[in-house]
Amino acid sequence: MTSCLDVTDVVRTLENLPPSSDFSLDIRGVQSVYTLLRYTPMEYLPKSVRIDLAKKAVVFDGQLISTLNPGSEYNDLMDTVSLFREYISRSLVYAAVFDRLVLYHLLPPTSS
Image (cartoon, rainbow, N blue to C red; front, side, top):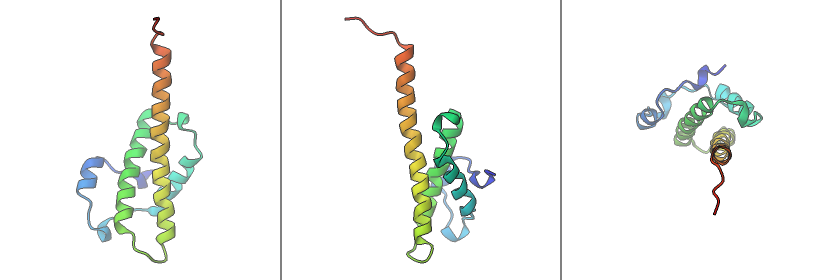
């Protein structure tokens, strides 16, 4: 189901993006995965999976933005870009809140 999301190294991938015509991406498959993730609570996903999916979302976002041309598929592609950005935002917010809660419970309160 997630084979359409296979991207290994995000930085290398972003630096070496092929011309848009050479980039093969199962956009419907990727869109369906991130649509499902929209309704999945972040705490259901292991940290490594959240990070990996966020990195992939950055790559897909960059590739789609570089290929956007006003036309018949423009609105659909912008909806997909919104899915990627929503997931990235949710994962960053969740990580910040979760890390703060963990630190609060692990560190004893300081007395003044």
